[in-house]
Image 1 (tube, rainbow, N blue to C red):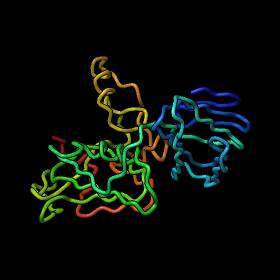
Image 2: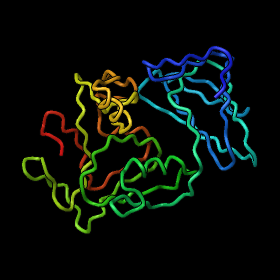
Image 3: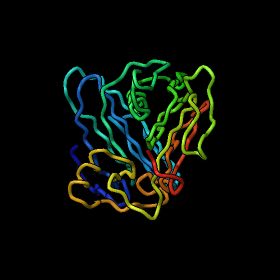
Image 4: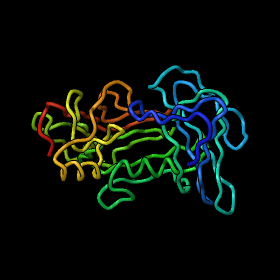
Length: 253
């Protein structure tokens, strides 16, 4: 990306601070869309379109807008900042065709829930088009952020269960559990700058025998006190799903 004007990358706070009159030029290819996520305060436009604004004064309320690139050759999408704006993410993705149902499981569309959520974020769909994620029973050791609207999680079992076994260590054969173990006050070899588990970060930190990121609390870097699931979009539903943070409960398998 190319920046002009007063744009500061405030890494510790997890956002770009863009001042009035600044611009951000985002390189794109055909069949891609740009997703801009912002919070607290914003006033900007994309490719000369209508102003996108917020004055929520909240670092816990993430808002986003999509721009679909219609060009037939590589180009750039220009974000013009009309007033101080705080951007938490500017992402470019290939567009994924809309489908109302996607599956998660060992032999399904996606093996992990985060993979399904990533695919949903790449779709271009109307406000009425819901996506249902049908999840096979089992443990899913993931930290998830649902930032696309109108998403449903559904247990795929014929007779879904939310029963726990062995004092919560295990789950029923027909249960789906999304679980993570981070707890504030501790830092982890596997923790990335977004406060989430990251396999690449874990590999590097294990090789160096040290961690590079200090765990944070509150809404900083999307932590929410190490929440297993952060719901940052309207219309989310979950049917027969267990959400768990196992910090200080038991040793994860």
